[in-house]
Image 1 (cartoon, rainbow, N blue to C red):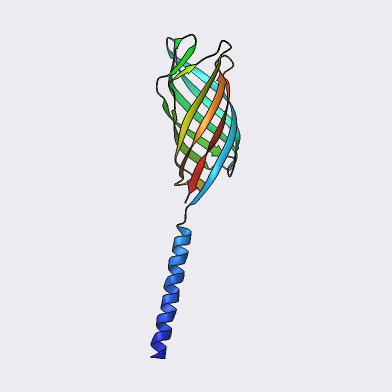
Image 2 (cartoon, rainbow, N blue to C red; image 1 turned 180 degrees about the vertical axis):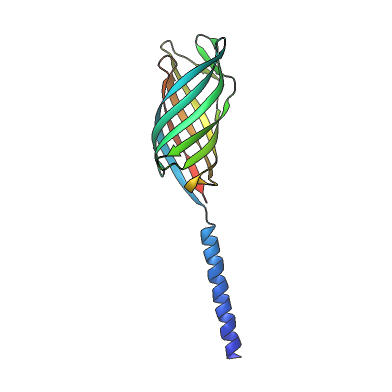
Length: 168
């Protein structure tokens, strides 16, 4: 009887250790991310007062280090000299870390009409949803908010990112 009890105890311990190890490896890690970026826009005319805006920015993001972000705003218009209209407010972007790992996401402008000052300054807010990635960001999820400032004449911009990322 003692022999059966010992075997049951060993099996019980083995199963406990197995399930503990399995749940530890399946644990997801969520971290706060903050970053700042400086970038340049390339404007590609697609019609009269209509263009596509290709953006590239570099910056630093906590838990990622130095990154390059790229995204395209597919259709932007000028309904008046003092307004910029984002005709397609949803777009897709990629952040690439120095080691080549990438984070993919979708962004949505909170406002589709953005006021422009007399000197060409514009401000915007966009919501980010992380949809995946490569390398250590494979299967990543999360989200955040980007607050940006730019100038339509110089095509330069800066933005601040605040959000969370969950990695498997």
